[in-house]
Length: 193
Image 1: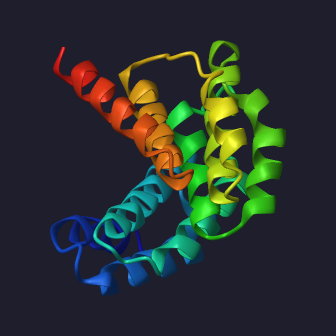
Image 2: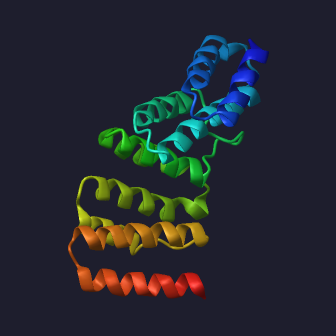
């Protein structure tokens, strides 16, 4: 089973358009999960989710529910957490966004409430604000989106870009054309400086 798992994981990378390898990989993973070492469990789950996310980027939206289900499993089995029990910023936001893409809004809200404390203390407020902003964008509560985005303290360039993108999308949805154009112009200057 282990050689088959590695074979199908390799083929998922080499031939991402052939979803048959992902289906076989997922079945093998689920059938033999308990036999794998914790590091293998975590890595192989990560590969499977990354494959699904890559295919989402290619427009294969049927993977939304699968990514959500994989993330549920990953949390239940403790595979989303580092050895010290903490969540990474990237996995935290990916889990929130996958739940929202699968229209699991209540689940996403409960995740934010229950798991923000699993982030490193210095990241909690910013990640919580980003997560709530995404949640409220999904529920079309645009005023709340901007309120939360204004509270984000940038940790790195990725946070700044994510915040700028979501802000621009919100201004668009609010039909604030003048604000949106000014914001896009300011972002263009930010990116070129």
